[in-house]
Length: 237
Image (cartoon, rainbow, N blue to C red; front, side):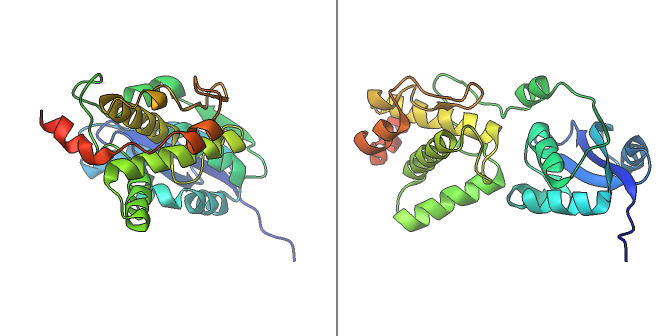
C-alpha cells in the first residue's frame, strides 16, 4: 500500500518579546495565518514568520526536526537556537524542500539577539547560555568535581576539538551563538588569570580555521588548566 503523502509547510516563527527563542511548527495553510492566530495570545509584539519551507509530509518533517533539536527545546514547539540552525535541521529532515522563503537576514538577526553583557571588556555574565549547554556544563562539573569556570574551560576545549575534527559542524548541544559566548567567556577569564597562552585560542567556525595558535592538539595537550579557584578573588577586587 502506497504512503499517503501530504504537501504542506514547515515554518519558523519568532517574536521580539522572546529573544533567542524560535517556534518550529507545520501547517497545511499559509504560515502567516498561523502567525496571525498566535497574535491573539496577548503578546506585546507580533509573531512573525522567519522561514517557511514547502515539503511533503510536513507533520513528519516537523516531528523529526523537533527530535533533532530536542536538547535545545525550551518548551513545547519553542527552541533556544538560531534560525539558521533550525533551517539546517528542517532541510536535513526533508528529502526535498519544494519551495522556501526566508524573511529575515540571518546574520543580522543573530547579531541583534546576542545576549547582552554589562561591559564586554571586563564584565562576565554566567547566565547567558542555552538550557542545553547549561546542562552540559553542570554534567561536566559533576563528572570532574570541578568549578563552573573549569567546566566551561573543559567544554570549550571539547567543542573546539569537535569543530576541528568535523570541519566546522557543531555538536548537538551547542549553537553558534552559544559557542561565541563560551569562547568569549573562557578567554576573558583566562586573561584575568594571566593565562596568556590561552588568549585568542579557539576555532573560527565561519572560516573553518583554528585560532591563532598552531592547532587545537597543542592547546589540549600542552596548555595546563588554569587554577580557576583564584577567579573569585579577582572578581571581588
